[in-house]
Image 1 (cartoon, helix red, strand yellow):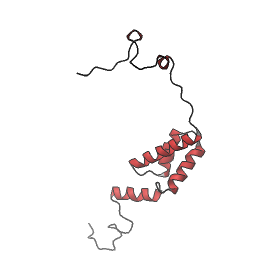
Image 2 (cartoon, helix red, strand yellow):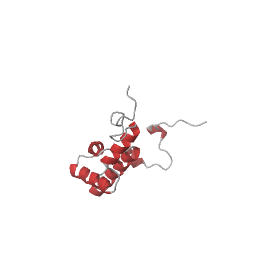
Image 3 (spheres, one colour):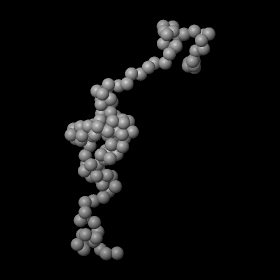
Image 4 (tube, helix red, strand yellow):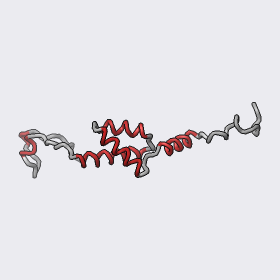
Length: 118
């Protein structure tokens, strides 16, 4: 059977090969460089758009939750749009197709009398 994983107490000692100094203090994270922050936010935008098509406002909201830098958010939005991954008109067409909406002029009321009136 498998052994359950649990934290070792100080009297049990460290796992083989573990460094005693590493457990004394928590790891300190250095703030990301501007390039790392840009790459991380761009990757997040692509992951968000991979799930479903998002409007610019939806994507902006998601990016603003991840970053406080409004300039960086605008830059990412511009780049994503430039690459063709985000287009509000495509999102509208996809939503209309999902809902089964037809273009205007093809409904019963605008058919010019081709349909029987109820």
